[in-house]
Amino acid sequence: MSADKKSFEVKISVPFFDLDPMQIVWHGNYLNYFELARAELFLHHGVDLYSYYEREKIIFPIIRTATKHISPLKHRDEIICKATLADANIKLVVDFEIRKAADGSVCARGRTEQVAVKTPEMETLFSLPQAIRNLLGY
Image (tube, rainbow, N blue to C red; front, side, top):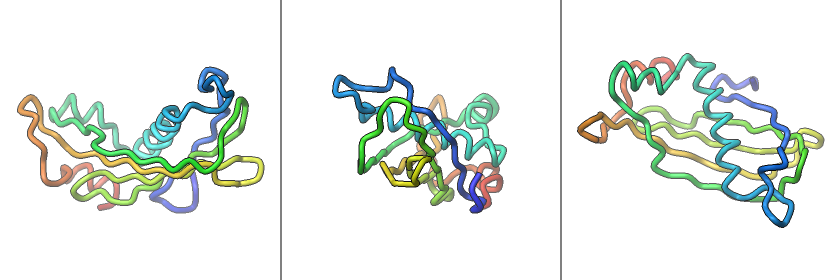
């Protein structure tokens, strides 16, 4: 974990199966790296969105993603994916940075946004549940 309490870092070794025919990481796999870091960030704060769903019947779908690819990742690159909680009031907003472990060079940046949706009505809530906000320090 980084020094900032709203950030968490995971170290990943790029596996062969993440590569495309050009032998670089396929662009969609960056979202997998984001997910690993986001899940660890939430877990660090005691937030388990699946358990919350089972208890409260509220899901947290991702409604927006963005990725800026700066330099390609290759097989066996050791990378650090940092997830930083940017907001947790109305929606969960997480910013990401992927950098090479060897030299710290930034390879990609991204962002995801999630909202709270009450099931089975599929009603989007206008703010995150207070219990989630409290755990994340909002």
